Image (tube, rainbow, N blue to C red):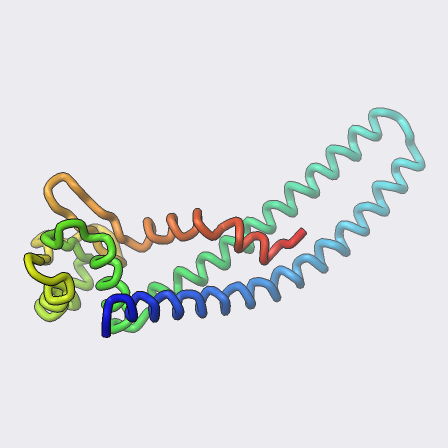
Amino acid sequence: MSIENILKKIEEETEAAAAEILRAAGTKAASLREEGERSGAKLREELESRVRAKASDEERRLIVGEELELRKASLERKRGILGEVYAEARKRIESLPPDEYLKLMSAFILKNAISGKEEIVVPAAQRSMFAGDFVESLNRARGEGAAFSVAATPGDFAWGVVLREGQRRVDLTLGVIFQQLTSRVESAVAGVLFPE
């Protein structure tokens, strides 16, 4: 199977998983939106009642402050939902079966390696998965002159790898990959979950 096919398959699987997560989050967001609208309507009625009862400037400032607090609470609720969506996505990625995990790591390494002679720093708990066959398959896939090797010292992380050659490091650990993914898709995810 070619690298392009592997990358395409990984991309399709990632998109399918993301769509599933977004569908579930959309349902949850709709429920929370309804709850928020009910709470907002109740608060709006209370605020309108206060405005009619007391029309002073001080009372108007109080209403503005309460509306600001409501917006802050709504924003905090939205951030919480986004946090749950990202936590679920991260949990799914961390629980990939070993063969899928190695395919994903292989694709990341081949896509991000510069010389093909990088040392691959792996987590101590996963060291055996990256031994022998894995490195040989990387070298074959990269082609002539490739000389990937697994670093003697394991990395202080639980998932992913770090490519190292001289002073150059390419961090492909889950935290960094997720940071990059989150910054790329956050506005799109927020738009789906919170269309208003």
